[in-house]
Amino acid sequence: MPAKSDSKHTKVRALLEEGTLNAEPGKVQDPKFHDGEFFDPDDIVQVKYEMLRRVSVENASVVHATEEYGVSRPTYYQTKSSFEEAGLAGLVPRKRGPRGPHKLQGAVLAFIREQLVAGEPIRARQLAKQILKKFDVAVHPRTIERAVAVKKTAR
Image (cartoon, rainbow, N blue to C red):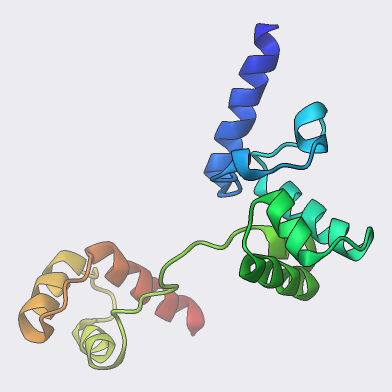
C-alpha cells in the first residue's frame, strides 16, 4: 500500500509545480471526487471541468455547482468564459502578477538602448545601478538582459 501513498505525493508535487494544485480540495463536496480513484479534488483543472459539465450537461444550477465544487459564483463565470475562449487550456490557472518587463518602458528602456554598444557585453549590473540613480527605479540585472535579448530577437 505505500506505493499508492507515494503516487499521491508525487501527483500533488507535480500539480504544485504546474500551478494546478487546488488550494482548497476539502471544499469539493461532489462524492465522485472522494469515492473513486479517477477524480481528484487536488486537481483544479479536473474540478473546474466537472463543475462546468455539471451545469452544462446535467443542468445543475450555478449556485448548486459552485457550492458543490467549493468556488464562488464569480469564479464559475470566469472559469466558463476562460473555457469557452481557450478550451481545457483555459482552465489552467495563469501566473499572477505583471507579464513582461513592466519597469522597462519609456525613458528607462530608451536609456538602456542608448547605453548599448554593438559588439560589447551588456554590463547589466552597471546599467541597473545607473537606472536606480537616474530614475529611482530598482531593476534586476537579469531583467535588463532579458529586455535586451527580446530586442535582439525582434529584429
